[in-house]
Amino acid sequence: MTSVETVSALQRRLNATIPQQAVRSQVADRLKRIGRTARIAGFRPGKIPGKILEQHYGSEARQEALGEALQKSFVEAIQAKSLKVAGDPEFTVKTNDWSADEIEYSATFEVYPEVVLGDISGESVLRFTYELSQADVDNTIATLRKQRATYAAVSRAAQNEDKVVIDFSGTLDGKAFEGGEAKDYPVLLGSGRMLNDFEAAIVGMNIGETKSFDMTFPENYHGKDVAGKQVTFKITLKSVEAQVLPEVDGEFAKSVGIADGDVSRLEDEIRSNLAREVTRRLKGRNKDAAMDVLLKVAQFELPRALVEWEMHRLMQQTAAEMEQRGMMKKGAQLPPELFRERAEKRVKLGLILADLVEKHGLKADPEKVRALVEDYAQSFEHPEEVVRWHYADPSRYQELENLALEENVVDWVTARVKVTDQALSFAELMGN
Image (cartoon, rainbow, N blue to C red):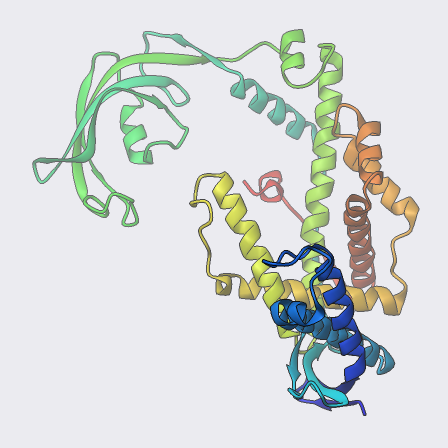
């Protein structure tokens, strides 16, 4: 007799039985297979008596056979009851008598919740916009030139964006402090590598000049001895080099990815790349706004198993990234609880999206997926190879299909809420 109890909103308990004979026959089969290769002192492989095999491997064979039988019985039972299981069940075997006709067991598990989505018609979202301009293209070229700048010695006073070499020493209450002194120290003015007040004191100095000034360190400064305190610095300027920007010519064009050095193509390439990046970032901002609406109006309990699985996945992903950057020792662990809020949000959103796709037919059509991959591929030197690469692996194709599904959901949300357009600046859009 099979029954299902409701333990809590999402937790269920299946009570069922397994015929003992089914497990016994599986144990016998396993022992036969083990006996073909098992090595026991005094016996040749394949010639070990059944009772001896039972003594050595019987317990292991029974546990494996029972585990397999439990899983099979559980799957058949939940399919018969049309239950959608979230996570793995916890089995409790209630029969310890191997001579009994049936093995009674229970399996405690969670089911997927019914997604209840509230009315979104009264909700409001901001739809971010941005119009790419010629100034953006010019500024990008200017940035690329600065990234490839060289430096040449000059005899004038130091200015912002100059590369200078200094000697400096600092005192706190008349005494030197750790890290407050250096010789022949290079500083790129305006880079933010040094504190603003320190760099500002260098601007306007001439080569060979020495000056003293007072400066207060920020309260949150990493050097605890001087954090929040006023110190006195003495600086001597030893050399000044001015920035020399490269000409926008064939060599420059090659350095930024124009293989044939065609300067006429440079601006077009930059404009195309910027347009793709602007589109990508706007989609991301607007997707987040739409998803926030769904999270706000959806009320349902989350399966604990799914949240914990996502917590561990995020933890492992973050730990691996930190290891690669040298921020954490290999094998070190992060507390999973740090990722609970993010995990709950991701699980909830995943359940909402799956429900919307199913109920409203928001599946991504192949043409839309193809358009996404082709657009993405345009930023690479050989777009056709990138397209083939995505289509060669079902998991990579699935990622793009998921993106297309998300775009369909965003369109569904924005068609039903109050939308207000808000123009962003280039810096706001790019997160600068």
